[in-house]
Length: 170
Image 1 (spheres, rainbow, N blue to C red):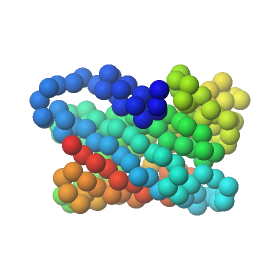
Image 2 (tube, rainbow, N blue to C red):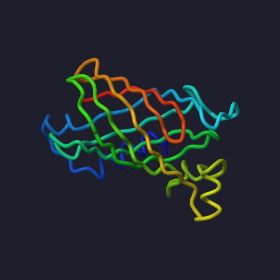
Image 3 (cartoon, rainbow, N blue to C red):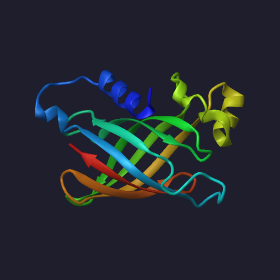
């Protein structure tokens, strides 16, 4: 099963689904991620546009600052990982600009597509210590919404990975 299909299927299965158009407005999709390892600098890291990042978000409610997020990507060692986390909108600067944070688990999951996530880097270290390859991701960004349905963002994954991506809202 393709990781993208599995992610979308699992997310829809875990989310309460309403048949009206209002429930669809709670969803968004993140794609097209660019990343660059500033600290620690590692020219051998899998970076730029090659990480194949894809995630789906669902706001907890229409007026909530929180969203549940589920996704997949290739880590710095080019191994497929699962991403499960929560997004928090910290500050609404204007109608178009929001400062947000994402706090997530990135690592192995019980599906075969994600079993190699712990084969290198910090994921391998955690796999040796805890039996599962993972890393906590703390990401803060500024998102600029060009329209009601499309936004671009730029931020950092701690300790120093520059990230830029696109968000498609429904």
